[in-house]
Image (cartoon, rainbow over all chains, first blue to last red; front, side):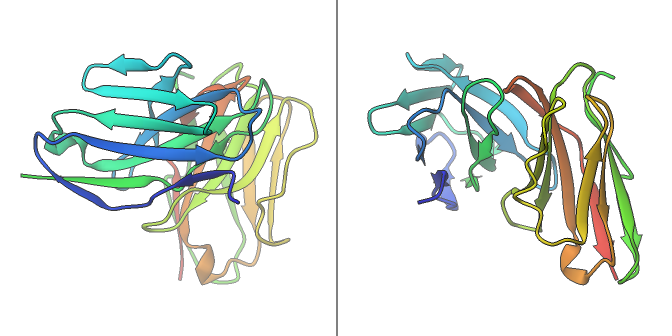
Length: 110
Length: 112
């Protein structure tokens, strides 16, 4: 089993739709989790951290389910500018190596 | 500096030549990663440096690839006897103790 697994998509959704991505991880000792966004031909950039209690940033909601070992990202009221690849990132404690998922491609269509 | 700096931004080289890619991390960041990303593909882990610990080289695809980092400063990734399949974007990222990974804008390597 891969350390971090994501559905590569693409997810094609109309403007205004709500879309959710899941990411599963294999190491139950993982401590910190992030979602990154990568635009075409650009480097990945931090979108948001994922906290145990769940967290929201505008139209974006991130959640962590430790029992089932997955994190999720919910995007409400999708915009054309949300079109990108969303990377799941999982880290152990402190100095352990981080693992990036392959990314889920989102295409928001008018 | 304010961000992670990579150079050169673009490199075209002939098959069989050696290339050296440079990454200048954010000052004080103890962790440094190199990734490779082929067109339309995900990030492929190459090597991880953490402070003065022995690097994790488990992702290097062959012995043509090597990387160095002195302390918590600049890192160089060297590819010897380049092949066409080495063509990709090489991304460097740094972080402080596993939080807030920041990527450089990458080096686009083309082997002709």
